[in-house]
Image (cartoon, rainbow, N blue to C red; front, top):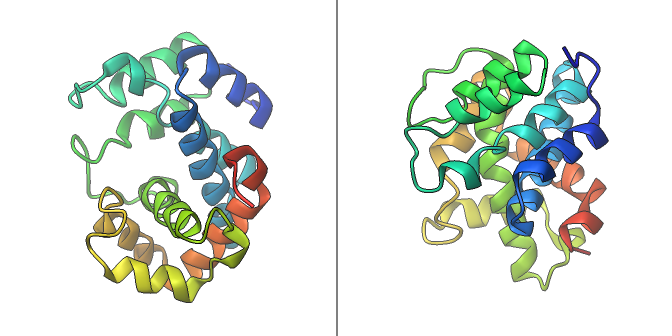
Length: 187
């Protein structure tokens, strides 16, 4: 069991199975938001970041088959000897198969997965300047259903189950993404 897997090892494992640069960036972004949420809640930042990195490890493998997404990822991680808790969160993260999340890490992953894309879309509107994105500008774009339509607002709202208000989530998300902006190709 790889109980002490860190960020670099998780990225190496992700890149073994994922080749699309945008998907790798999505996983890095989700992980950065996960790390900040964990820090805010006093949870295991390293583990939550690793979960964020690995959550879509099977996405290219399953293609359009969302009945397999997450399940195949768990199989891959099990084969690779990854910690069982991480395997289980990845297995259950596909909201089309599972739902009614109660564990803080699962709720955080639902929100981080979508809010990371929303915040990045806000940065792209500002010519890639993440430094110009504020919680207020994210809040405004959140209300525009057609903006970053693939970012599920209901999944973002899941964070409220953890007593984190949306403006706080946006702040945490922006802070996390600022830490990895170079990897994401943002300023």
